Length: 321
Image 1 (cartoon, rainbow, N blue to C red):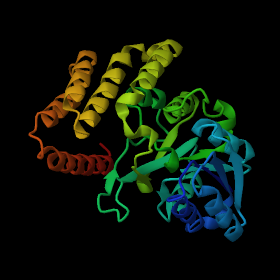
Image 2 (spheres, rainbow, N blue to C red):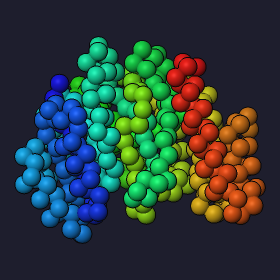
Image 3 (cartoon, rainbow, N blue to C red):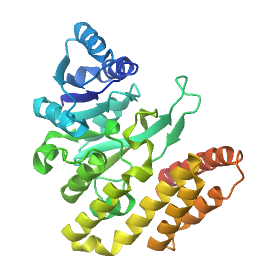
């Protein structure tokens, strides 16, 4: 199975070398047919850095665009991709060295899923001193309720962890270019409608947090999330009864994110909206507890709670519960 790796870069001169080298140095590097990089309107030194990478690695192909946006840049790369499988990597993330090996092993073992993905490591410090292993929901190729579960729980399936069958992309279509954010969720919703997903255990991707991340504020994504709730509740009537629970989860996560950034009043307002949508959600009450912590105590308790939560989640998944 040949793999086309598609990458996007917009003013990521600081990170793009690490990203590309994490692809070149894969243990399954021999399966990589091409590395397509769309340099989308970068104003920093990204062009020179990418050109240098292209001279070093013949599989690197560079496409230059004038700021067409993430979805359009990914679609351009997808149209040029010729591999049996397509893997995505954003220019500010990087892969674990055996990422593709683990995913190809699953696909080569008779797995019929259209999309294979895994956990990720969330970090912002260059030395990874704040790295946190984020366990994501584990979908299986034999699961019959992929769309229902994904609609309700909304990922996160990180694009940089995805490997997709070419047939799936041809079947469901490209990323929706009308979306400036949330395009990955909309894409996965369409994928879940017709295909299944398969989780691969362990962290596959190192996802970097920095000031230019599109998803740096979850409350800014609420209109997109609620719009998708409305669209899919109308598109698939069996999802209608889950709409309030889905929106409650979106508001709870956004409220908690505001609290974590020190905006407790706004966070509390969003948590109240979450409670209105879904008053039986335990998550909302945990977030209210964190909101009530004294200033200075919150970050330590929040990180400890995250570590315990993701550790417990990984154990539950390992036990099959």
